[in-house]
Image 1 (spheres, chains in turn orange, purple):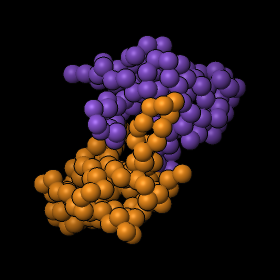
Image 2 (cartoon, rainbow over the protein chains, first blue to last red):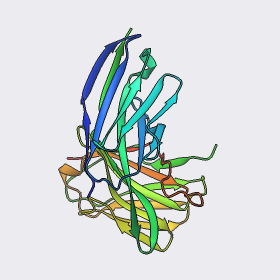
Image 3 (cartoon, rainbow over the protein chains, first blue to last red):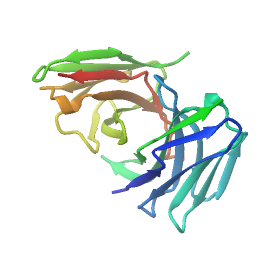
Length: 118
Length: 116
């Protein structure tokens, strides 16, 4: 099955700096890569995703890049703010089948605790 | 707003006790999931259900069972709780759009379970 490794496990930056979180995956058939943000005491929420036919996607201060050959993808946050402090999870999705129903099977990384210091 | 609701929010129980975590949703989604979150291990899938008559094991289903009572309700049971089942549990839903196999997950607010 798919295996997703996420690094670093913790990341501390100063407000205004950039932050980069990296993930590698093992299954070359994975073709969808979402990122979830979990603020302290809150539920995870999708912040950005990328599909395998795209190399980069941006949404304001966040961007995700994908290198299919190397099987890794990264989350980039620019001009970090204290409200970016959270746990970030990457995930990789592989087309699977359960009881005749096709679906994208998600495997999550271990999470990165990002702290942005004012 | 349509939401995914979990009860209870917190639960402390003793080893060997049976416990049920409940999830209900008003999003109208067919697909529902149970995940557990442990520090350093991310989110791991316990069970998932694509409709009322469909139940599938996830990667860590041992020690757990589920029931899909209705389209909107999906409960997780620990028949005999043990300390290493102490974790944060999340219910989630998703809604497959035609032609799209990869779906956004909508998580519930979570249940923190402690097994002593």
